[in-house]
Length: 283
Image (cartoon, rainbow, N blue to C red):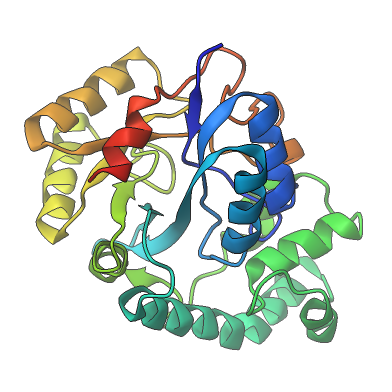
C-alpha cells in the first residue's frame, strides 16, 4: 500500500465534524503517513493531533489555514505548514486576529437576527466554545447541533460568509505570509481557483497575482487538490517549475460535512505523493 500525505485537513475546532484525534485515526485507517491539521485560523487542535499522531506512528506537521485579506478586497486562504506556533512572530498576530473576531461577534449575531431572524445567545457560545476565542465557527457548530441547519456548506454560503468582516478580523495577506515564514513555516496558497482564491479569472491574470504573492514571500502552492482537473494540474505544475514554488496538497478533509472526500484519498482516486512531505520538512 502506498504511503499517503494529507496536508489540508479540518477538525471540529474550525468547520470539520471530527475531533483532532478522530482526524488522526481516520488518517491512520487510510494509510496516511504524513499529516497536518490545518484548521481555519486556529491552532487549538495542534497539541491533541500531535499526541495522537505519535500514538499512531504518523509524521505530524503543525498547520493552519489563514483567511487573509488581498489588496483587491478578496479573501485568500494561506496554509501555514511546519511553523513554530509558540514563536512570537506567529503568536502575536494570531492573538490579535482572534481577539478582533471575538470582539466583533455581537455584530455578527445582530446581523443574523436582522437578516435571518436567528436568535443566538452569545453566552451559550462562550460556554461551548471550541477555541480560546469564540468565532463564526462556534455559530456554525451551534446551528448544526441545534438542528437549525445540518448542511455545513449552506451555513457558510447563506448565513456566515455574506457577513462582512470587521477591522482587523482578516490579516493582510503580507502579514499572513510573514507570520508563517518568520516562525519557521512554509506559506502555501490553498486551492488557487476556488471562491477563496482566484476564481473566474483567466490564467494569465492568475499568474500575475501569484507573482505578486511571491514578491511578498509566498513559498508554495497546492498542487494536489481533489477538485482540480487536468488543466489545473498542468497550470500549477507550470507555476511550480517557473517560480520554484514548493508543491503541497491535501484533501481539504471536513469529515462527514463533506461526503465522498475521505482523508488522504478523496473520492478514492486522489493521492498526494510522499515526496511532498520530504520537500516541506527539509525546506
